[in-house]
Length: 490
Ligand code: SF4
Image (cartoon, rainbow, N blue to C red; front, side, top):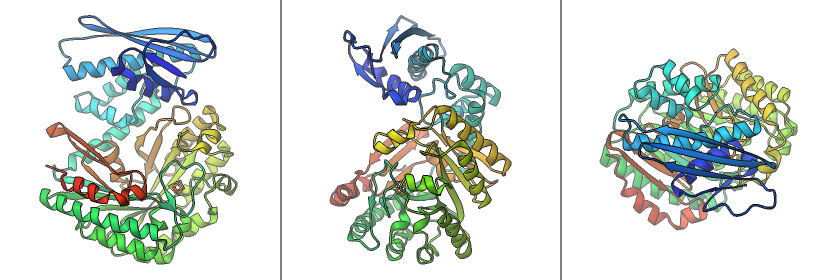
């Protein structure tokens, strides 16, 4: 559906809110006057009107032939800075879309008018501005219409982030390394990954380029006297590299002098890639954490989504990791996979916790444009069934001794849900919190990597994005290295 707005400045706010509220209608915002609409299709308009000290946002939505309009107003006070007033105006625009949607559909999304993907960071901002936890909850519930349990989840994530932030020094950084290869492509995946057979030249050429980028980052770290707090190797499936290639990559990363005690995650992801030879290759490089991702414990669903491994291989992989290493283990599950009932999903949550990983992350299937399968099949699960899965998993995991510690939302999520990381006591993944709350600079290496240098103390935000595709990453490595060398951390 199209939504028309005259002021381009609020295009992003309107589009984000509309996408979060009704992803299945694939809303798009167009700047300009609404043309005469005669074909009965859905549409919307948003007008933003200013007076000397106030703003009025008026939204009209027409969905399935029904029309509704609502306005929201905010008044500028002496306490507003230019920045806080700009935020208030954007929030007022989003509220107008939310309130019109609620009146028209009767639905009250659990995350209210929140369009951002970092609810914990929003709550942290309130705590840091001097609000008490109770006032923060009230602001989330009454200012953003967020449901009580979700507001409590955001507050919990904010409190964990504040604790981690208090331990950080200005020299701390995190590293992300992307390995864009997988043993086969899962049908729902929208990541840029290439399937690779063991030992294929593509991965060797990729590692040639990655080594050059690592060398450039080594200089940056050295010059800034930076301290690496966390390393995360993701993708893709990093363990789809051969043992020799894995060892080569980890040896190159050793040159960064990753301090002992640094949290160091290797996403193994696909259990069919976890072998004794690969684990041998990982030992001795400081890796502390590994992901073994079942996604589901239903063989039928695994076959439908084309993950090309069995449920049995999940427990075998966990057993092997435990036998050969003392690595912490994370497991990812996805709610809303096609053909998975609420009962089968709940049984899967229990089977995951029976394997006793340190972390369990529960994702909700995103209806991403990069995956036709996800778009088609994801809609098979109703928002009501998803709510049972997501809320049921929170209860089950709590009963099994796991506590939520971080969360994020995604655009095009099926329903108003979130991805939540749960951890056993003292076992949170710090990288997840650092990255999601933008607590320290993250230098990203490899294709698709997005380096973010956030320095709140210096009001600095720099983003450098590497090319998405491995072929482009390899062919443009000189330019990438040049950009990396010029990063100023301090
Ligand atoms: S293993 Fe993960 S990254 Fe690779 S294709 Fe499957 S979902 Fe995508």
